Amino acid sequence: MAKTNTKMAENRTNILALCTYLRKRKNKKETHKDILMKNFLMTLSATACVAISLTTACQSEPAVQNPELSRAAQTLDSLYTHYSVEGSCLLRENYPSGFGDYTATYLATQPTGGPNPFSYLWPYSGSFSAVNALLEATGDSRYKDLLEQRVLPGLEEYRDTRRQPEAYASYIHTAPQSDRFYDDNIWLGIDFTDLYTQCPDEKKYLQKAQTIWKFIESGMDEQLGGGIYWCEQKKESKNTCSNAPASVFALKLFRATQDSSYLAQGKALYEWTQTHLQDTTDYLYFDNMALDGKIGYAKFAYNSGQMMQAAALLHQITGQPKYLTDAQNLAKACYNYFFCEYTPEGGQPFRLLKKGDVWFTAVMLRGFIELWKTDHNPEYLAAFHQSLDYAWNHARDEQGLFNTDFSGKTQDSRKWLLTQAAMVEMYARLAEFTQENTL
Image 1 (cartoon, rainbow, N blue to C red):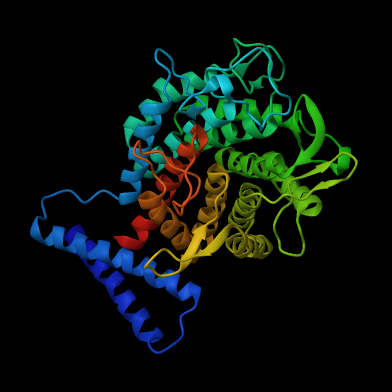
Image 2 (tube, rainbow, N blue to C red):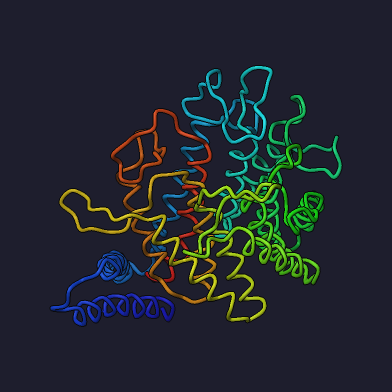
């Protein structure tokens, strides 16, 4: 009964916060930030009212499940329904599959030898991140079982021990040798480290992460003053997508092991990336630097998002205010660049995530969440929540799969596995934020 009364009090506090906000803003012109925060508080307060009613009417009933967790679980079900390969732990790349007329455009060299019936490593790895995020958000052993019985056995199909140091190749090991990407392996290393953090008795997860780190180290040299290449077989550039998450990976390994060498490497990679690839006019990050010093000027959400996460982690570990300032500057810049003003028909304007690679957005969200855990500013995650809430109602099809345009104005004829995994991850990761701000 004491816990019930506490939850009811916290719910009422949420409603009072909305009332206070509306009173203070009365007769004042609303900014976009004001509208965003009002809409978010109204959503949370409505949920709080329902929770209070349910608690009062039937205190013996279990609490209503967090809606983000429900959405994550439903999307994961849709993923496995439409991308599974019968008799295998592997997944298709797209739905509808159409693998006979599909060519992956994100590889260093285009594959030969006909169509591939399974996804490449990068999209498959998204299922690891998605289930991992659900396990972290819920602590539900079913997700641990799913990892052990399906996700990780499928991942082993990509493990390449023919080349040393061992790593995960871009396609399954029974096919001709494929390229090995440093960034693909870094994402896996981060997931294995996170999984070990959740299950510290399972040393095998940490061992996997440390084995991957050895491969990442093999991609470092003194060309351009340091940094990590993008692809083992095509060492022509050093990219933000390999260096920024490598910093995050090293810092997570430091937290997991307290081995100071990881902290030193995490700091060095952060500093190298900031020095060589940050746009000093807006704090965002360029894509890559070629060995001749030429910059690839494209700006992607995940690159800046990973530098934001690295900065937040460095602040948490070292206490140095510089890193918090870096993360906050990046957060503001990402919010301005990767969101757009949107007014739904008959609705109020708000900031909507721009159409693009949804997985890039999911990785950017990791940075915003790390910052929120550091400075507790709810503004940016409230914007993510509102975008994903809108996407749930406007960007899904009849199969429960998501289009890349969250406004719902355009639909994709073929839906990528990684997009669906990214949606699972984002709903799962936002669950902690919405839970803390609702209950």
